[in-house]
Length: 301
Image 1: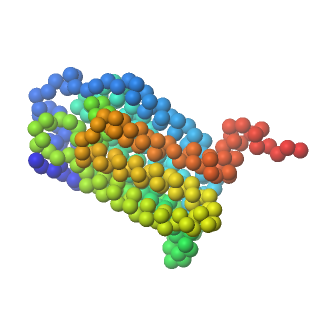
Image 2 (image 1 turned 180 degrees about the vertical axis):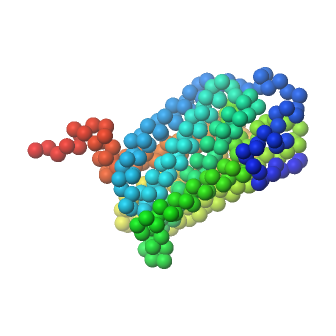
Image 3 (image 1 turned 90 degrees about the horizontal axis):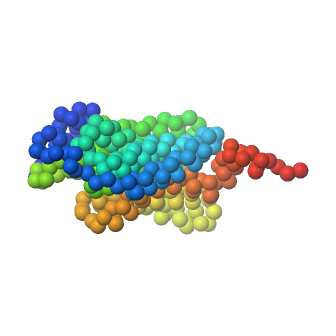
């Protein structure tokens, strides 16, 4: 069994033997399992996250003078992009699609989803770093968050999403597994081992580092009642725990029930932040209410 190349040109994916649907003598129209109910649920959950996220974006932008809100804005953009990709994946599940049914479309959905997912993971990690630095007043690092310098830091999640999207194995929607898999399920003879070292490293390293930082901050957050750190902590912990679960599913075969739970958890991971903001952040909540129903925030005489 040969491990697929970990450094590749994803814009020429159709020239790679490990993603060549014409090699095995298979009638691809007979493959795939339509999952209309699950696919519809996926699309609905994506919409449930995208709509309030768009409502929160103006509020996050208006508070961008604070470095943490700059990173939260970047996280919002990446999460919306991921949800769009996962929503398209829901369409694939509905029609019973597989990679070899429409390779170019499948790869586009995979690029959109995985690129934004990696950017989201890095943004989430950077939020944890920012909260840690500001909570413990690490002066040598605080200067990186002053003024417009924080915008320069946004290059990091941008590159962190773009580089693996273009040159690392990505996952595509597969109706047979009702998951996004790195393995396109082309070959049945195990000639290739489909894995992504970048994905595994991302999904194991970032949860560990972020969890260590937030466990360290728990006592301080509780003592100071720092609402911004608490809401960011909830987002990071949910984000990272879900990443670990999905990474395991790329390595081992599990029950269908667990696969359903893992994929729904991935959807909810990206749909959760706007609800956390609206619950814990009164400034964001007030800003959103002025858009939805201005009369609800008008002062009474």
